[in-house]
Amino acid sequence: MRVRQIGDSGPTVSVVGLGCNNFGWRVDEAGTRGVVDAALDAGITLFDTAEMYGDGDSELFLGSALKGRRDRAVIATKFGWQLPSGDGAPPGGSREYIRGAIEGSLRRLGTEYVDLYQYHRPDGVTPIGETLAALSELVDEGKVRYIGSSRRTAAQVIEADAVARELGVHRFVSAQNQYSWLAREAEEELLPACERLGIGLIPFFPLARGLLTGKYRRGEPPPEGTRLAVQGSDADDVTWDRIEALEAFASDRGLTLLDVAIGGLAAQPAVCSVIAGATRPEQVRANAAAGAWEPSATDLAELRSL
Image (cartoon, one colour):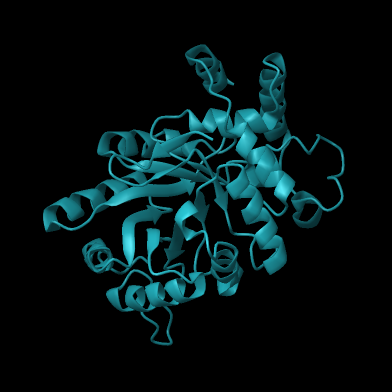
């Protein structure tokens, strides 16, 4: 497994990471351990979860699975999905919320520190300076090693970086946003901004909710037990045209669609680790193997033109 630094100052992580959003919802504690075992065996070091995944059970199950081998993992979790409500709950980006949230995450994960603590989504009311100052306190206290953001626009990422520099507090080293070969909006402004600022991009949904795994075919029912068999799909003919073009690109090179979906994305500027979810050990092994493909400049030019 290749490794790469997150941005210009973050931790070193595996090029393929494990998204832990299924833990606690679709995967029980025993299943989580099996997936985590397979990830570690494959060389995956980045485990990305959140306080709200599985209503807290994702952190709990992940912490249990990593017990006794914490030093092999870079644990990334997120806070602040909650938005302000009328019941007096503090906004997700406020200092009050952050101080309580980190204690809950540390307890569930069974660890003394989080490697990467990420602001899950902007709450729309808390000044970013307050959020950054509160997160910097956690870094200085040793409860958090690095901080990052999620679901922020390019303009918001740029603003947060400027405010951190102005205040002299710790900067976001990462940005976690949706990015796949079927959802390429990040290429317009976010990727260039991250590259310029030395911020690592961590794409989520790199497999487009399963459409880029190679399991599905136009006009055919999804295989039983798959995500789309349960949730359905709204993929239209234009989307299927793009999927089939990507499959042809992969076939011409002796690759799978999964290789292109993960390995190709990992080759984009500023991308540091591609986090893909898994519910079974064989899925995480396949995702890890897909990260081995390193496209040439010609491959990338053709891939981007599809």
